[in-house]
Each structure stands twice: as structure tokens, then as C-alpha cells.
Length: 123
Ligand SMILES: [Cu+2]
Image 1 (cartoon, rainbow, N blue to C red):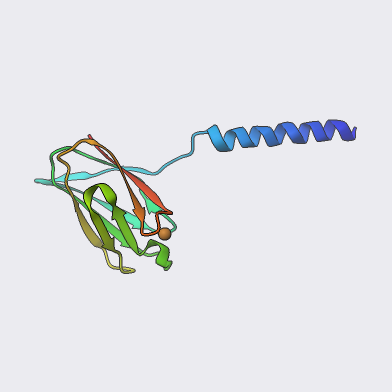
Image 2 (cartoon, rainbow, N blue to C red; image 1 turned 90 degrees about the horizontal axis):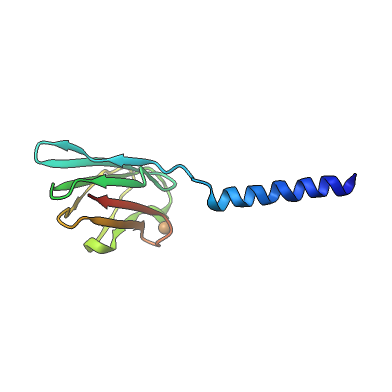
């Protein structure tokens, strides 16, 4: 009897591990809204980035507005290494960041310590 419950426990644990590593986790995704000649999107900074996957249209000037409500200093900067951007995010003050969308591709951004990440897709 004890052996059966150990076996069931082991199978359940293996199932959980497989799900954890290979299951599809939901990622908040957002597409920038076109307004006249520019596209823009608002990103919330609270325990990470929402959305953390942002889609931009190629060749249209883009503005990402980050608003940090998270009190942690971990998130007080946002860095886009491919664009040479390292911007301070004062708590509660929306910060507009202009992105050059001339080169399509997938780029990442991160907090100042490279702990939280977001993804930018220009298509
Ligand atoms: Cu950090």
C-alpha cells in the first residue's frame, strides 16, 4: 500500500516537473496602437512588465510609455541594449521611450540588474 502511494506521488511529481519546464506559460502580449504617424503602447511595471511581449510595426515611429508603480529599486531602470537606451523610471511617473523601428527583429529589454525581461518584436 505504501509502495503504491509512493509510486503515485513520484508520477505526480514527474508530471509537475514536465509541465513546469515544457508547458506553455501564458505571457501577456500587446500590440502597439497606431495613432496618426506614430504607434504607442503603455507598459505597467509592477513585479515585472505588463505586457512583457510587445509587437511593433516596422518603419512607424514608436513610443513605449513605462509607468513604474513597483516600489522596488530593482525595476527603477529599463535597459534596451540593442537601442542604447538606459532610462530611469521614477515611481509613478510615466516615461516615454522612443524606439527606432527601422530594423525588424526580436529584441529584449530588462531591468537595470538584468533580472526582469521583456521582449520587443518589430515586424
Ligand atoms: Cu532588477
